[in-house]
Length: 397
Ligand SMILES: Nc1ncnc2c1ncn2[C@@H]1O[C@H](COP(=O)(O)OP(=O)(O)O)[C@@H](O)[C@H]1O
Ligand SMILES: [Mg+2]
Image 1 (cartoon, protein in one colour):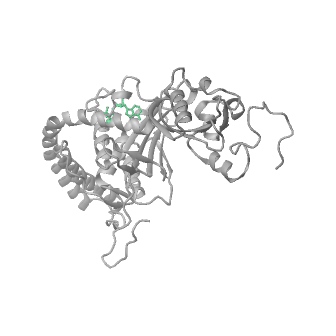
Image 2 (image 1 turned 45 degrees about the vertical axis):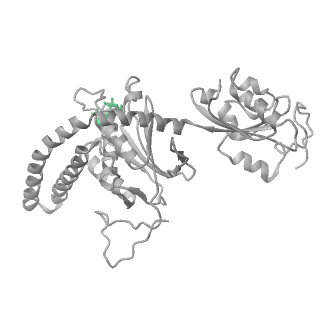
């Protein structure tokens, strides 16, 4: 490609590596993190594609700007650039409020700044959005509130167990007398009561910090089960759309708990779309290899590449509930318990995962990120596809 014959603003050195073509340029543009370069006068000389949406301006506009015009006045980012320029060494600032940028006005970023030795005075800046890490902090805060519900939960659990054994017995009797094609539903009642009893055992020890028993398991098997349950009960009138990544590796999880997490979210979704035109719940799975979460207080970084999203087209979560919805006994429903999301938060956290929510009228989305099963852990036999002892179950990739 020849050099542009049109006159540019003259702001960029013609041979600046960042404005040229080639592999380097392609790599910069492929990055999901916004990257900009400013010269010795703080004029922007490079912006990758991610920077466009981050700063809410096209590259053409960005390339004519001075750094202080796109960063908040007095922002520590300006000091950082100056310090890097003076010291000629890379530096990082964590949890910086990014400034008056349209797409990230509320979010904090970590900023990685490096000098460019070939271009004296120029500094490159890479921005890493912190929303995910901050959401974990928020979620950890609600864990404290979850623990305060321990006593009451234990008492409730005790009261629920007795009637459950009655229901289970009745379902077992029914199973022996009804027609073959209805047996599936009776079995469903039996299996589900068994599952609830197990979960209640768990609720009784709500504040217990012991690790959950986990195995390699296929999220889609759990989701299929949840879908069957939902369509014969809690979400009978909604259409459930599946959007699955068929190559999703196994999760490192506890099947009963994950089923409960998905059911609680789908139940809330179904309740929210009761009066919605064309009520739809969309369940999606995706492999996102890049997501790594720092654990506060340690240098550990956990990889959470399995993403499960449950989305509905209801009216959205009431604004006053949104910041506290994972706390127990917070409910916007007249007959609600406010325990559904508290349990979800606890179980996801026990899996080392995170859950986040974004909600607006017409679209509420809960996104769960979970760890992958280590490759040496063999999958457990699942309820729908038992593995023979002689079979050779394949470990997850
Ligand atoms: N998908 C959703 N759409 C709208 N509001 C929701 C949704 N999920 C949860 N909520 C709100 O969060 C509250 C708490 O949910 P939850 O903890 O499951 O308790 P409960 O369902 O018993 O009220 C609900 O009462 C509701 O107001
Ligand atoms: Mg609920």
